[in-house]
Length: 556
Image (cartoon, rainbow, N blue to C red; front, side, top):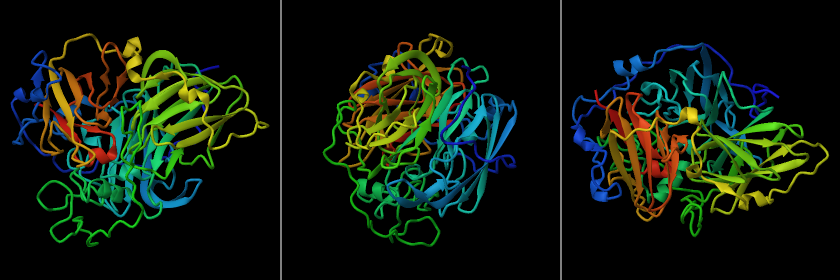
């Protein structure tokens, strides 16, 4: 047994080809404010709404630009360069239950993993063959700010027919992924794993299985994610500095927010005029409940749930030998669904979450919010076993198979192994491995972010303010920063911080995304050591596109 005998079920990395440096980018919005907009540690009641930090008022200067010298100085290239080509395109995909027209990278779902070693420089030329603009966000990577993929903040959108060169050093090993940060494009087929190998891998295993979970609506009976967003918001358009086609372009109405103009045009400038009315069935989820998620499990009733791009009717199969130690890297790429995951006939040993190692903990089942990742190790038994991803609170499931015997019969798609109701580990029960724990230190600054809004009005926001790209919550390089997430809503929210990992309280795990239950508070700490403008947002794509995002900005 050794650490580097591996086989990924999703296949080899994307084909290598030439690329050049980043294209010229537009300047980020500039603003400034006094440091008083960020609360200092020890001031007031952390849970009091009145004490919530106010974002900085838009002014000129004062903040580190994503393209500034501070960013360049913090990210000197090192290690070999891995060159990749990635094409975003319209395509037809076979999901098993049916074939759909959608958008994907290189006509695959998920796209083939990109695989590098920690310390490598990744150079990816993204060609946009979609009918609308797009970007790519490298989720969980502590990369240079101008490569973060946020349109209108860290880069201009990649126009239809154009390309963009992402180039950055990948510092930390672990399980990551990439996806668009334009409109609700994430809820199409545009995603893939990004696996960063540790050159000194301490974990011993024989095989590796990459498992990507998803909820699926695009192209089913006329539905699209944009129509789902419109239905949820009563005609509301995206609020991510993009139009309601999800293109990532500014609609030119001077508001900085997407939407139709007074004539009903969608505003993307491509001459296609008003968007036609919704033709598919209603996709609003009603009456669902989840004890684990504190009530409403989500907003969208998806027709299908997938593991590695396939429904339970025609599942993917991973093959190993009895007795093999299999490392399973689980990624939730869903738009609106938490998944409860179990492997029938097996216990799982949790080794990592969101890329970073934890003290090993045994469990029967795991709960993954959108964008979360967990690595587990199992000892493969003899037979064929269902890996079930139960759409938490939604009553449906996705499935893949672990097969170590060719003679054993496959389980039915309706199977629900007893492990789904067994011991459940949540992130707050885990502890970071000793070598990745933050050094004990009181926070220099506390930023309180109270989540507001409701399903009824679909007016999601932070501290009562919907997303405005000109606003910032200021921090300074070298500070220990505490984000105090306070959920004032009846919905759960997976909260994600770009460009950093934070630590959960009391020596908890290092993560970039954490589940925030209704009417609960979670404090997370991070070290401000990656200058730029960084998003904080809910990773429910419909919540974020309706306003539940903001920006943390490093002061010069």
